[in-house]
Length: 221
Image (tube, rainbow, N blue to C red; front, side, top):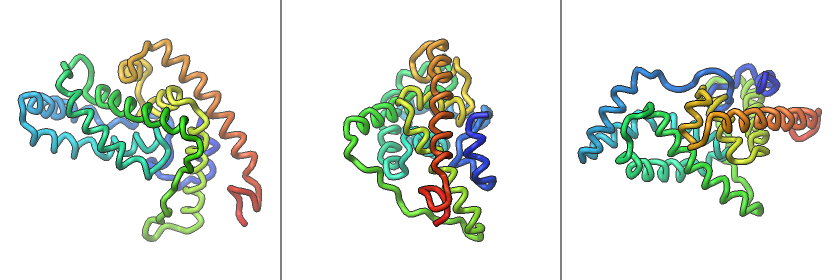
């Protein structure tokens, strides 16, 4: 299965740092509340936007983190996402789940950013210091970081549109039809991108794992 190799590197890898198959979308029980907040916001109640932000910010940050692969960028992109959402929500008419609509805003922001990064290959990706959880075994923490980094590197090999489809399917548990609506494409196009993204991700992961030798970039010194 896709991602199994990365998961095998660290059984302690957390869901926040390791995409994997299976639904990860928050329970749909919050959909009525989100729709109510949207309705209030459309009526001019800006306090509803604050609540909307609180209910979705963790999911948005986590999704953007996997879409762009750089924690340093996420805070700025999170702000841009909600600025766009504040305008875009005026056109939401409830034809789809709000979170599908919300993921479309996230994907547009991420796509713009990824395209910008590809035009600036000289820019290095700054990674902040890694922090271990209190009481976490150092060896398990090191394995978790290795697995997370391998997934990031493999995702970086995917073109932006394939990466977004892959993350939404594997991380967010969205169906091809939902993804198609979120990215403004057809389900068949999404399935095609997903198929190729899986092959490319798996190939990239195998190559990265092949370089993991004692004393190598991902091995023990």
